Image (cartoon, rainbow, N blue to C red):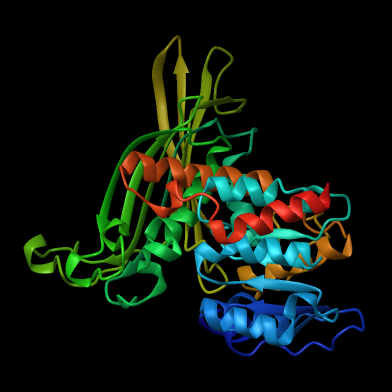
Length: 436
């Protein structure tokens, strides 16, 4: 088991097998040479026979624009697709520029700064047009078999009732992200909700299969004023917790913390409040009771099952993950409880949950990013693939849910208030007119 885990880490993140490239391989240009680029695209591309990394731009705006202009990256006919990992506030502009240049776009999450930008991007005539370039918001975790197995255990109508409550959490211990990092920049649409929070909200939406339309409560912790030297920086969230409710009455909760501290067991909180701490990424679903047919109950008895499913480490399941399934069984007669018991199982999943899903041609060592890249290529090539995708409507609703969270928090944020920047309005208007 340990050897297998080490091999998955080595092959998936350090030194994947080198693939012989196809003649029609997709040539990628990278806009934003950020820390996420190697695991998200550069490393997976080494082992993909249909992907070549052809050009890499810089991380910050001035260097990225200078590189793109000098090398005419978006108008280079040898570049088929671009991966955009620029600061959040630049996603809308450069995604639209790439689409206008007829390049496929793998766009880092969050797709835009706010819902208004997301609606403008994903409803753009150039994006909606027949044979439009492929545009994908990079929620990589959704493409891995572990997540799909988790979802199948939740939405199995044969044994599981409707989802009543969902929870998602992600922590990063205090001190990992320096205070000069772009994540704490108000003008670059930073903040915990725009980083880890995008994952937690996206997980809730997947689990609930409904939009968390009502934000019940929000608590947030800002960047310390002593460290907040950016304009509006005190409006940047270091951590965010929120609870939601759907139209059907299901509830959800999130925790997203980019500087977690305290909470150490067996020690007073006053001693540990400034000591970095970490918790496993976790997604959890609690389902309502469902009556099932069972040989364990007599004709005049009713057998019910109530399920709880937890997925640990959904962001890097190829390194380690575990799916815990707990089924609580009860047998009733005329409304009286006769018997109750629990059945538990712990699962791991490195292959597709349905054995007939032959379109998924992954390896056990594939990271979530490998899985995502595989489906991105399938979409460009017009192949069926696994069927997992993040469409434009999904990305719009995602940003709208984040906007609602910030609005409930009472934060004057660039995400919920700025809208389309003046610097990109002319680009947007001219490309709409050209498309029409």
